[in-house]
Image 1 (tube, helix red, strand yellow):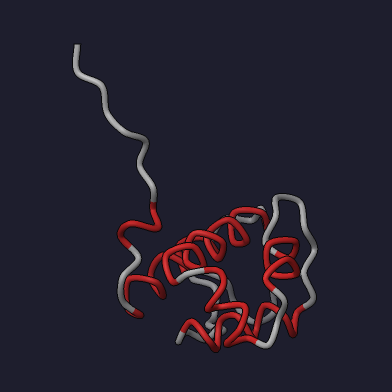
Image 2 (cartoon, one colour; image 1 turned 180 degrees about the horizontal axis):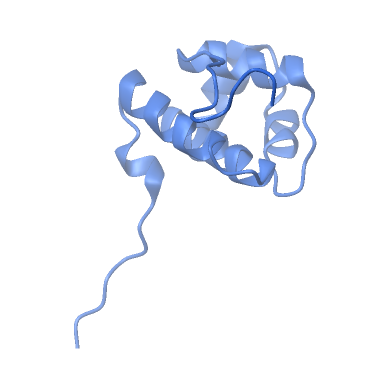
Length: 100
């Protein structure tokens, strides 16, 4: 019987384009915890300690902000994304008119 190691997305998040695509896919899910989990994967790929330092956060604060069920502040998320080299972009929803 063949056994496989669990897939860790962080192992594949090695450039800004891949990270941006991964986070964009996570944003398409209506559950905000999916996006936070994706940011956590990216943070682990880049190194939590260095990311916290670059974002001006304590390491423990970063872990707390990205823990399951957390409700991080918007400015905290923006700082993290900036340090990660990505930005959020708004675009029209496909198939919906402006009037609803």
